[in-house]
Length: 159
Image 1: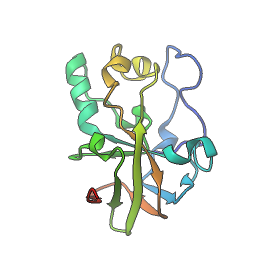
Image 2: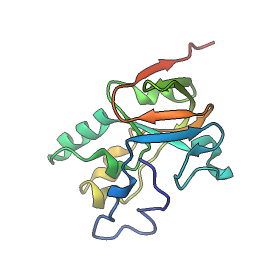
Image 3: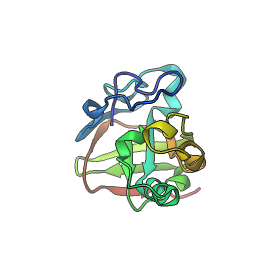
């Protein structure tokens, strides 16, 4: 996902803003910059948080807890959604994703906390339910391309 504009701006409304145009099959990542075409790219305040990563299992668990159908991961507004990865373990760690076009190195940073819009776009209770499992904000360390589909996650050893 990459969005040139905020879709969940201001106080939550009662309807979900259109966002299908933000769905991408490929993201171009630039080290120290972010996702090309994304609203946070190149912004000094977001340098350490320019790429957001979430594990889809968090969304699946939340939907089950709230008793609603599975959520479209696009609605969570994270750039990268992974399956089978402990995203919380990436905080403070250097890691790389390789979708077949070479590695993109990232540094996991602070939590990607959910906003109140989650109660509107996902389900009532989703804002509170996503706390502590909304993903991680990352600093991009290298240039590269991330593609939709299988990827290899490599986590740098702790020194």
